[in-house]
Length: 81
Image: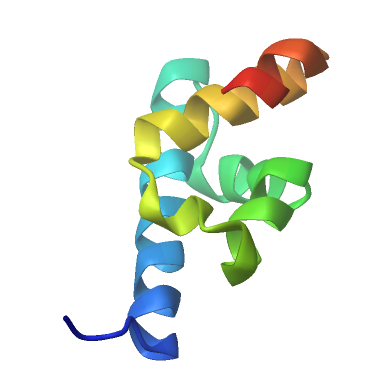
């Protein structure tokens, strides 16, 4: 089995970031740029961007659920997700 290299990790992080921003923008009626800025300022994105956290291996809806929990201040749910 091949080891995941840094380029693949970056592609996964970028793909999840785009999917979360697109979905958030559509659901909340904001621009994708605004959704992207909001996401990239969140702890959830910080965790996604850290390869050692392995969040890049999760599906975008899972990461979006984390973001929504964080933005609503529901840290207990954020930790569970």
